[in-house]
Length: 85
Image 1: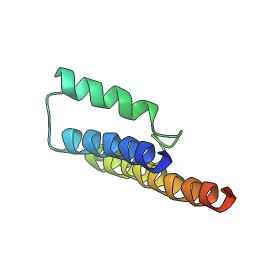
Image 2 (image 1 turned 120 degrees about the vertical axis):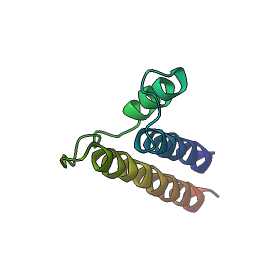
Image 3 (image 1 turned 135 degrees about the vertical axis):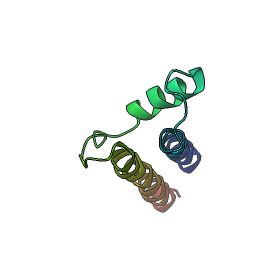
Image 4 (image 1 turned 45 degrees about the horizontal axis):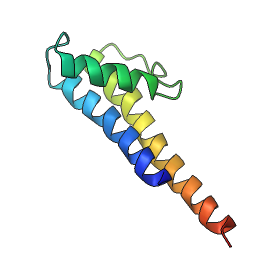
């Protein structure tokens, strides 16, 4: 269950990256929905990198957050499996 949840979080971040980099209408409801969700899932690293290019900033920050969620899912699920009887 932990892995599924963290993969869903990472997928939300990746969808936001794709919509932003592809130039989706920022006022569209779907784009706003994923942007708001992704902003809450950045784990505080949503502004870690500040390159001049907005697209690169989104790719680096939200992409890194997606990778961190995947790593968290793997580590926590392995720990829980190791602790299980």
